Length: 247
Length: 247
DNA sequence: CGAAATCTTGAGTATAATCAAAAACGGTGG
DNA sequence: CCACCGTTTTTGATTATACTCAAGATTTCG
Image 1 (cartoon, rainbow over the protein chains, first blue to last red):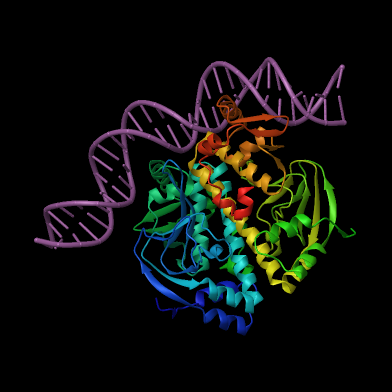
Image 2 (cartoon, protein in one colour):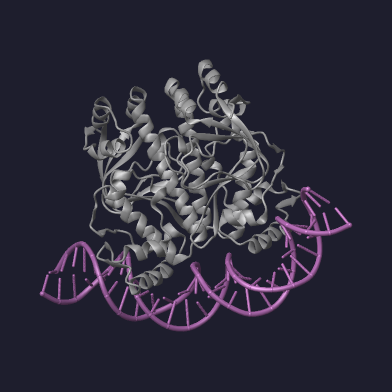
């Protein structure tokens, strides 16, 4: 398991965009090492109950955090895009309370907790940056609870579309008004507490209303304002910087 | 607005129980100052959109984090018991994405972010302790998403009862198998994405099954194993220390 | 004691789930 | 290029869980 350098530019930009890092801090982040592995779709990276000694930075591809219920139903708690560290919490929490799975082929860097702890100890600014990331994750969880708990199906899906569109723009993966959308209807159902059949019918509704187009794993928003309205969407919970919001 | 000392023993114990703090760190935490205010039930402490300069430690009473949807429905994302700092995230996130409200009369300490930042800067162990707390909060959010998204009504309520019972035990507020339960059925409904009427019917079901007793704002668990079974409850997500779990 | 809040009950309904099967799509190999 | 396979999407019919509306009973608290 050789550790190797990887492109930490995404990570640096992400933390730096919020509270300016010093040159030293940027350098320290950039020199983080980790094992880079390539994974097939539908593969567990870590599982509920595990106590991993590394956290996972997504370099390429899409993943999700999920958990099962006693009667075998799946609930996805979070979708992850490149630049995310979905299990950063395992740095401080010993046992994982949910599993992490790839959705598409993925390239991820597994960074040892020892290294992460070392940079945190040496650079408090990095600690704060990481902490802040996990706080944004928590804010997204709150938004999902609000959506799943109190919005009806159409609204939940519209809200998710808005969220993903904005997050993809932030990491530079949205091209104008469209972006990759590698999620099956069954997966969307597991995100939003619905059934695949119902998701299918709602998608038809959204298409019929000329709000979105969804072909070949590509999501195109035809009417952003309309979608925001349908989804009751307010991007506050993503805690974006002012500069990023405009873009 | 005079700052005054308050009993930070709860806070010290909470952080100390996980990763041992040094004497210096304990002292620093203990000497935190804040304005202590008393609040009536149903009062907002902070609101979505606010940018508070202080975070709130609950000394006495019960509170909740909530948000509204566009059509005026309320979703509660989190219930708070004494010892919690429900809006600690505002230390690093500028704008609140949800509101914080008292449920019962509360005594809270409003601790300036400047003070919190100062102890964090001086004592990395405290930073890690606070960070860890917010990570546990996030784990609870994930558990709620799983429950609301994929469990049916009875199970959701049973799960919430289990969660609250365990959390109350942790802070020493549960007496054997019963604890204070100051939540109305309408409030439970807003936690779990249900209607008050439906919550009422489910409670009758749980009582008929001899799982719980719920009288005069007091919850008594008659059959813990049965309740755990009904609620599909696994306490992993609370990330308790081994010592605490046994108790 | 009385008003307001909370809980309870009943009847009818809607949203979304379930079950089942057909059509379309995507990738593979001949 | 096309046939084939598994996956995903789509459609239809039926059902269940939970919602809505409305009103009465009970509790709580001043």
